[in-house]
Length: 355
Image (cartoon, rainbow, N blue to C red; front, top):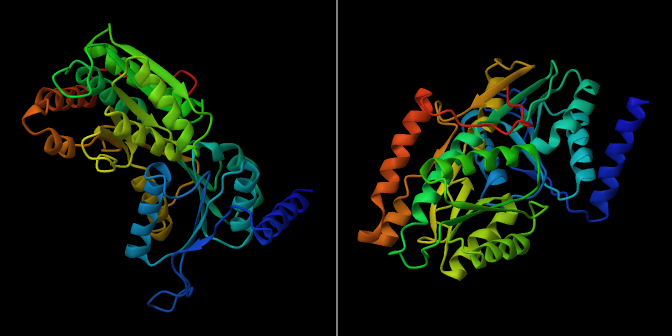
């Protein structure tokens, strides 16, 4: 029965592709042989969305391209908005003989858990999630720690009313994609970081219900600005491009996520919370290349090993000149060391397992 289900999923992918579905395979390397004449390692990345988000997916893509450059692997990337296609893409790549298939999102947890046992000779990895299995490697992040720093920065920035666009109200915002545990973990840290600076700071929260709707992200962000927020954190992947655009068009401010988004709209983005999805992707591929791959193992990336953190705010510093609030940057460096040392314990969302 499992073989029948697998065959049906592969047929679904083929039919969907012929019909012009939104799955987009992209071969980043070809030829199948390395410089020594050996078969190249074949790696497939399956996305629960699209490249071009300047965030989570693009970060994974950067890590994979680094592996192409350093190891000469053959890479295929599958993009799609529809959950049914995520599963079809995932199964198709495993059935097509790829050596390593990576699910790029916590949303692949059930798919990986369901299908990895059907392909015992294939290696799998999941980014931002944990799946048990002898042929599954997982990676998770302390996004609560990174968000703690972002919340602290936002709470300090909202008091800088001498900066154009910052009002006297102590209100900051946060807009996420889907209401899922990993994003709840982001928000838990953000809220704690703001309260650490000033318990009176009000934190607004909204979910777009999707990672692929920039207009919805923009709409929710403008709504939070109308409620007194002057800085809003983006935790929404493709939806987040609308959050950043709202900051620019409204003369307000935002905080980026995953990749360094500070330069998307220079002067409108205070900082970005870096979540090194690129490193997690690269490390998963490197482990197979160097034959150090271990199933049933979770790589944990936090502040202590550079897995999460904030940008240096240099773009905003250049934009604001003498008005740049250096005290924020100094305080963030102090808080980062306190989190590293364990002096500050950042709370985690109780429904999110990371190790």
